Image (cartoon, rainbow, N blue to C red; front, top):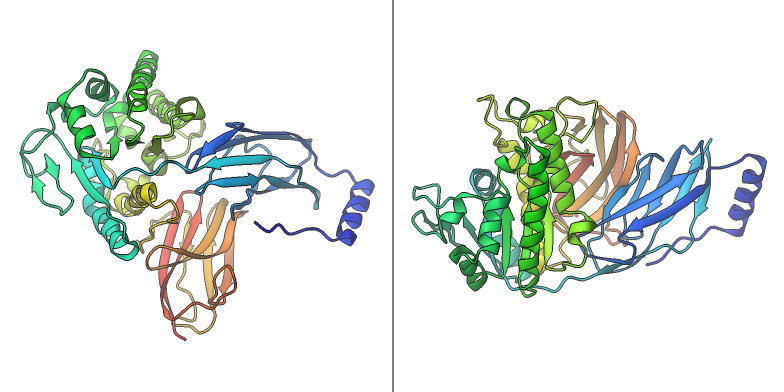
Length: 457
């Protein structure tokens, strides 16, 4: 990866400036795990800075650059590809900066690739997501375009009706087919029964499928007592011991969705967050290369802010408009999360895949993305957007297959206000792109909006 270098004049100017007025300094920097991670796993970066540091610009050297405040520690980053990456930081204080570019490497290894036969174990939340967001269609589109052969099965409740049983890769529903009554309990103890007590359900999973995706249900988060959280961790450590015995299989743990405020207490919601954070932590994950995690909870819940009475609960714009105790995410939530879920499944067998993007309506949230102008365009167009609150903001261009064409704005902390950006119709290497429909996607923290545009050469 090519790194830009400072000129001698710039370095001398910087040194002279810092001699005249003290600049922010880095007191310590480390990351967990310290040796290596597997691609798509989190690396937690920790740092401390001198008093007075205003902001820090972090270059992860995988194309991601973020501007953060000094108190954002640890900061979690996900590397999508194997390789060696060198963290570098520009530390700002009183309008001046110091570049900290000592060698601080993160080593990312590639996971072994499994076969193409998947089984997704879920209940109603998973069923709704599959239905509303077209997960199967997105995977089939990838199969056709990139010559993969992902076959996605899914397993609902054990009881027999039109909404339960097993769905085949061709979307045929067989409500009376089941791997066992154990499918009715997809909480930690239920999965412990499946994996640790020699069930026929486990034998069927291992005999028929290469990738096994296991979603927790709502009730997993209903931990009234601290002892339940401790028990959940013990059971999942034992489940993990069984998974370790099958290195040729890939296991994906999926968190349950958050509850709406009427449906849960703050203590229970906080324990749910703690449990799902632990399931994806280096403590649980490190060294277990065939296990990964999809954080449905975090994508749908408000952040873990102690001052927020709805922290770790289902975001208001993801709630259904009826039924105060119905915590199922609404259609907008499914439209938002489904493509991310499909992208995660695709990347298991195609790690070079970037993302799956859909054009979904945006909620009344913290941003507004206007139509680009002009549209159609040749060769350039302008994007305008408004932020109602500060956020780590990015804007990217994708083609209709979901391949990333160019990052117009890499993740940058922006205050509330109105902004404009311009795209000249080229990719990151400066190559002109052909005529066609493209998607542009704006993200600010957890708020996301996307639109379509037409390039005509």
